[in-house]
Length: 190
Ligand code: ADP
Image (cartoon, rainbow, N blue to C red; front, side):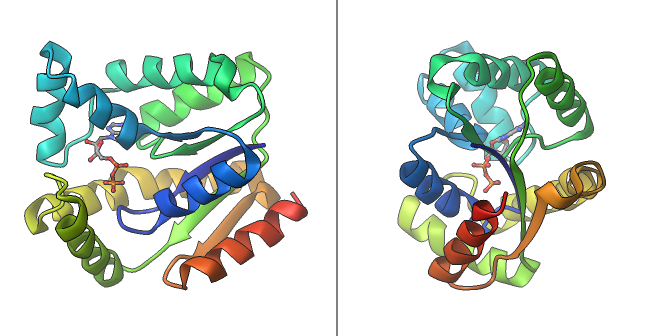
């Protein structure tokens, strides 16, 4: 099963992706998590990532594209994957579409998490209290949301046109269990 998940920060896509990954025994590839673990290594790359991510900017495509390509070709992903947080801009989306085609990888479902900014801001502020993520403060959240709506959401529109009935919009303001239920129903018919 190969899935791509779109949705603004705080829309709950990470939560749902990890539930789905466990149930289906496929890896949850969160580019945010992958980059945070690289950042924690504290080497030159880690320090560069820290500067970019702490203010809510996107990491350069030249860094993230090969990371994603390597992961998707790894043995872990031979039975599928859930891609969360990628693609995030036009260059990444072109890279991914080309990569999937070259490697004969067919996406089964694309899920777009729809949530309003008031809801997601509230959730992120709550998460920041619990997880203490350095990029979860109001100013940085604003940058991340602005980037999402300017650069990533237009891609979701493009994917919707390209993938048609494989593209599924979910009301992400619902309860976690209801969202899970809706996704599972959709997957049964995918
Ligand atoms: P959120 O979606 O909640 O903002 P993520 O955990 O997905 O958080 O990402 C955190 C940060 O990691 C982003 O603000 C960005 O700096 C970086 N990042 C994650 N995915 C990408 C990507 N595909 N391209 C560039 N930067 C990324």
